Image (cartoon, rainbow, N blue to C red; front, side):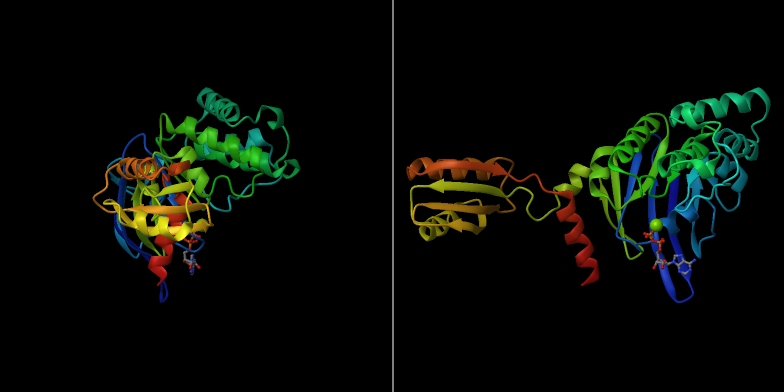
Length: 316
Ligand SMILES: Nc1ncnc2c1ncn2[C@@H]1O[C@H](COP(=O)(O)OP(=O)(O)O)[C@@H](O)[C@H]1O
Ligand SMILES: [Mg+2]
C-alpha cells in the first residue's frame, strides 16, 4: 500500500532523513519509533506529499506522491504534528469544511461528518466552537479531520502526544479499531504504545532505519532476552557462580546478589541454546546440587532495553 524508496531529506547541510526504504502492506499498523529529532515527522511529511524529498520516491496505492499527487493524496488521511484548527469554527463546521476540501458534498458530506464525529466520540461537543474545547476533544477533532473522507491510509504524527493517560488509551483503541480496515503509520516515542497497538514497528534514529520487525521480534533483540534469572538458596555465593558458568549452554553469569547461603544471578545463554534449554539445565543443576530453587524466570526481552541499546549503537 505504501512504498518508500531511498527517501532522503536535507535541510541545508543537515540530513534529517537519510536514504530510508520500507514498505507497508494493506492492513498493517506500523509504529514509527524514534527519539526526538530522529526524522519521524519529516518522513511522514514526505509520505503525505506535504514537503518534497531531496531524493527518493513514495508511492501510495501504486500512485507516486509527486507525479500523481491528487490520486495518492485522496487515499491518505493525515494528522500532522501541530495540527492547525480554525478556532472560531464549531467541531461540525470544521469537519464539514474538511470534507468539502476532500470533495465530499451534499448528503454524502453529512454522512461522512456524522460518521467521523461518532468514530471519534465527539457527539457531545459537535456544536461547540473549537476554542472552547479541552485539549483531548481538540485532538480528537484533528483525528476526525484525518478520517472524514474514509481514507485507506492513515498517517498519524504522535497521535497521543499531550493527552492524559485515559485519553491516550482511548486514542490507542481508536487506532487499533481503524487498523482493522486501514493501513496505518503512526509515530510515537512511547514504547508501550507500540506494544499495545502495532503489528510492526520501525525504529528510526538520526534519519536511518535501525530496526524493523514485530514488537515480539524487536524485544528478542534486547541483550537480556533469553537470559534466565535464578535465585538459589543453600550454598555460598561465589562457588555457585563458577559452577553455573561451567554448564554447557551458559555463556556468562552476572551476580545480582550473593550471600553465605544464597545466590541471585542472571544467566546468559550461549548462541546454541534453544528455548528453555538453559532453564532446564539450571533446574537440573539445582536438583543435582540439592539447592533450593526459589526463582527461575526467562527474560522475554524488553522493548525499552532494545531501543536504548540500538539507538546508543548508532550514536557511538
Ligand atoms: N524545516 C526544517 N528546517 C531545518 N531543519 C529541520 C526542519 N524540519 C526538521 N528539521 C530537523 O530535522 C531533524 C528531524 O526532525 P523531525 O523529523 O521533526 O524529527 P522527529 O519527528 O523524529 O522528532 C531534526 O534535527 C530537526 O531539527
Ligand atoms: Mg516529530
